Length: 370
Image 1 (cartoon, helix red, strand yellow):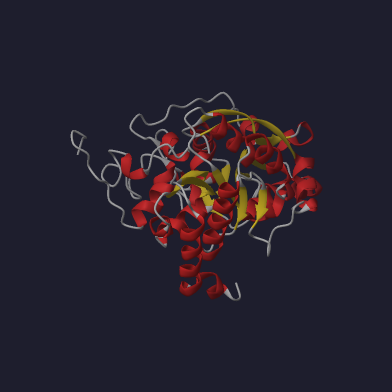
Image 2: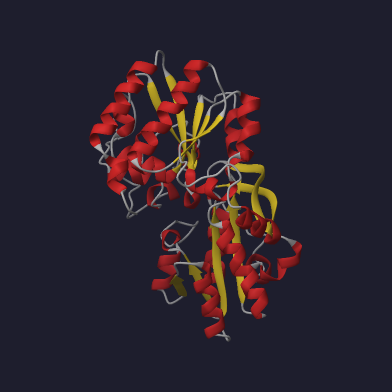
């Protein structure tokens, strides 16, 4: 990206921190929803540089982390079949299912391939008509348009050997669920800019109005996040609860209307279980009946598969911001990026992975297990 250094300028960062110190008159708790934003905050130490009293709460915005365990186990069951070529983005390969992960399956001979676009999977299906090619379609609103386009293209080509295992989730219902929780401490949100580049910010407006909570659409660079925090604190200090757009260079209020139309054509809203959190009503996408022929879960008969989380993993508490990775007894010992107990430690956007990469150590409390 051109002019990237402009968004990492240390003098501008210090200026924004000084302004924050002058504007904030009381403690405030702000949640960044996106895992990519979490990694920037932790890697750059921004969360520790903020004025005293301003606390960042890490949210459930890691698409890999919230993909339900059932979906991972269904993926393993499908990928293990001899006639299947299973395709996925690389960050899903080491996410643990109940018994194994996709990378281990590949090591044992399964045809599991990393792709950089769902269209790569469609091209594979065209090139290898005797193979059943499955794409693992996960993520928030950001990745849904490309996955919808892959299904549309497969329909145009008449491909009978291409299908998708869908586990899309939606951000606004997760925000609502967090705010409904009586123990919620969140007073403002930083919304993910790439999600809003697709969907716009109109879905956030009813949330901000109903809960009187500031929501600032924010980018991913250090200065984006500092300005987003400053805008959120400004609203809180003024007693406002509105949607504002810090990421004006990439996001419009209505988003990408063509992408939204494509998603609405291929998918429909459904209830979805979030890993570590549980079921949230109308919080996901599934293939609409018109495109049900491309549903890999139905094609391979794994819709009824159910799974149980690892009892030691506190991913749910971490994903909702109730706990930090360093609160977990397994963090950095029994749970590391090489031996993860849950997705937040292995995903490139996971909070546990961010803390581990930044070298943040667990502080043992008196009477706590080692």
